[in-house]
Length: 165
Picture (cartoon, helix red, strand yellow):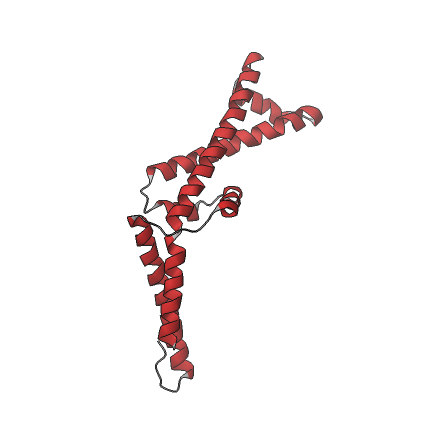
């Protein structure tokens, strides 16, 4: 019974693992949209402060020392600039990586806001790519291996010498 359950968990792991490349692609598309949106906001900010003779850094420095109304107006721009820098670096890292490594990079540098947006729209599908098959095989191996190990330990502890995995 333990072997059968381990196999079923392995199949579930394969199905889950096979979704990683598709999820990653959709994540990257959403990330690109966020970068484009923020770039527009930051470019508008840069143009407006340039009209007043400021560079982005000098304007942001003044915003950081401002009080009350100016502080409230500047706060959103400073956050947009900082977020754009972070998201651009994340996107560049993903663009430079191979399709086999991208899902691991998404997991390591996961942006919650983008991830939530992707999960709301993501629909699982059967992958028709080599890297989808690789992640399916990896998912199977991890889920099957861990469950076989666990069932083996449980069988040794409670099975009275019978083998469960």
